[in-house]
Amino acid sequence: MRLLLVEDYRPLNQSLTKGLNEAGFAVDSTRDGKEGLWYAMSNEYDVIILDIMLPGMDGLEILKKIRSRGKKSHVLILTAKDTLEDRVAGLDLGADDYLVKPFAFEELVARVRALLRRSYGEKNPCVRVRDLKIDLNTKRVWRGREEITLTPREYALLEYLAMRAGQTISRTDIWEHIYEFRSSASSNVVDVYIGYLRRKLDRSNKPDLIRTVRGLGYRLGAGS
Image (cartoon, rainbow, N blue to C red; front, side):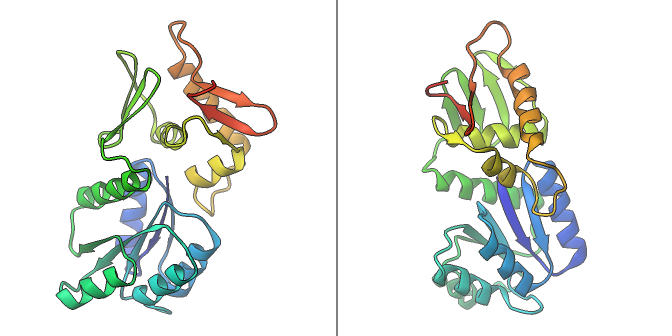
């Protein structure tokens, strides 16, 4: 899943970016409001984590602009202000959730995951595709009764495919959702990670879960 973090305090920005990467998310980050707006308008994000007090343009103005231009990304507001008026202002402008500083990193991740589940109408934290089971809360994966150990990047790729099971997803779309905007990795790395997943998921003579659709991309589940 691809996230945008707009937070001006450098230590917090760096620690959140590192933690979210380690949790399996692709994260673009900036400390400037105007640059944050550019990122939000130039890319498709699953969740935008947005501070209010920013240089260049404040977070509420960014939120107002992205909503007025039809952007549907979930927005999680971060703020040191804990007044009813501030919370109401953010929610009225289209924020999906609100987190007051200081906060525990684990709570931030839990709120991001809750927003992602909301995106797909998924109240049950488990996603099933044939005999594949993914627990979105714990990020554990099973094929039948066998638990599969994945790296954060492998998990991010599998979750992205599973949320779109039965759909053919292009290499470009996959790359954009599991790598940061500034990443130097090429789209060929998608093929490499698909290979890693296949070796882990398709053992013990089980039917293949991931199908290559020639010239188009990859498909998980239905029709595989």
